[in-house]
Length: 177
Image 1 (cartoon, one colour):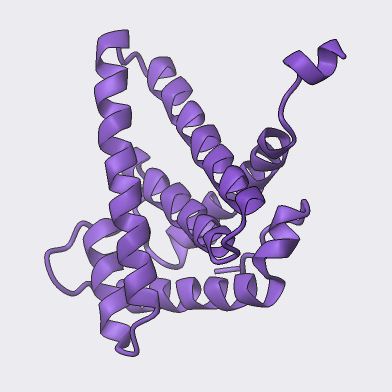
Image 2: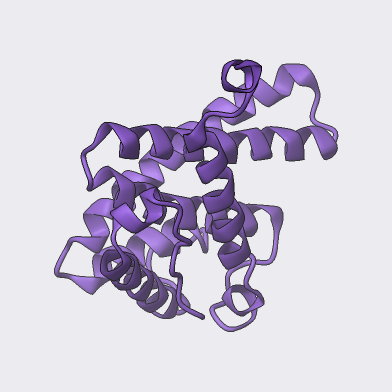
């Protein structure tokens, strides 16, 4: 009984497992070496945000309470990790909250831009979003088309896998860059 009261909620354990898998995908050396993602704190942040957004969007498509709970738990797990990382980097307590709030706003903005761009028939839309967010470019970036192919492939694979599989404890099926 105490374990039920004080133990982790089932969605928290699933979210932590999902998060570990998406971080592994986001840290793939090929993203940085082959696709030119900057191998910096910001570049790694963008890749974690990107991969998490893809999973969250897949879960949101289910439109169920369980999917919403898991999506929220995944979001919370990611930001708990970001909080811990900032503290390890020496960011003071007073600065962490402001940075987390800014990062959360960035996540929602990026997830929405990704959702809209990935659904657009014009491939330039996704490339523009990726150029701006990942490569910090005002317009086009020569590296963005290759990353857009990766993102579209990831979306296709996650769609084929289905959000229900993620909800049931499956690993997100990300492609090799």
